[in-house]
Length: 228
Ligand code: APR
Image (cartoon, rainbow, N blue to C red; front, top):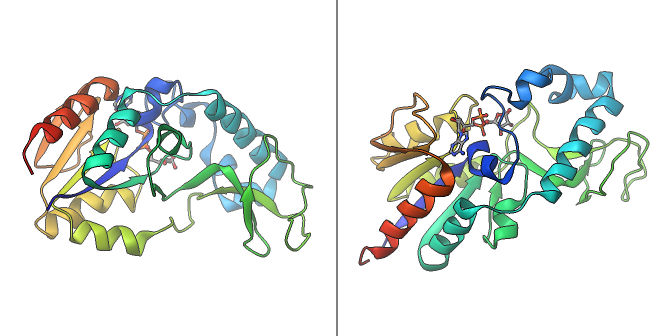
C-alpha cells in the first residue's frame, strides 16, 4: 500500500498569484524578515507586523487554487496522501484537501500570545484586539515565526519514517526543519522526489522541473495510472 508524504512550499501557490519568498522580487527582498516574521519584531512593532499579515491575508483570500493544488486533491482522493505545507494560505484546503498539516500556521487563524487560544482571524487584525478567551490584547496571527517551533513535527516525522514516497513541491529547502525532511526520508530508506521550478540543491533520488501547474498534474496523472 502506497503512503505518500508531500511537503509543499511557496512555489505551489506562485501561480495563484501569491509571491514566493526567495525568488527574484520575492517577499524577503521587499520586507525585512527580522521585523515582520520574528517574535522580537512583533514585540517591537506589533502594528507593522499586523499590517504585513493583513495584506497577505487579503491577497490569500482573493487567490484561487491552481491546477497543482487541484491535482494534489485528486491524488488524495484515491491514494493515502499526507499533505504537509509550509504555506500559510489555505489554498490546498480550499481546493478540497483533507487534514492538511499547516506546519507554519495559517493566515486565516489568530492566536493569543498570552493564553494560546486560537480562533478564525478577522480580515483585518490590530494590536489592540482582545483575545476572545482571556481578554488580553496580545492577539497575533497564528503563523510560525523564525525562532519558533513549527507545528506537528512529531506526526510529520512518524509519517516520513513510514512513507513509501516523499515528495517536495515548490520549496527552496532553505528553512529548517522542513528542509531536512528529505534527509529524514532518505535515512529511513524512503524514495524521494522533487517537483520544483529548478533544482533546490537538496539531495533527492529524482526530480522534475518546471511550473507547478504543469508538472504536478502530470506527475499525479502518472501515479494514478499505475495499478496499485
Ligand atoms: N512552480 C514550481 N516551483 C516554483 C514556482 C512555480 N511556478 N515558482 C517558484 N518556485 C520555486 C522556487 O524555484 C523555489 O525553489 O518555489 C520555491 C520557493 O522557495 P521560497 O521562496 O524559499 O519558499 P519556501 O521554500 O516555501 O520557504 C519556506 O520560508 O520565509 C519562510 O515561512 C516561510 O514557509 C516559508 C519558508
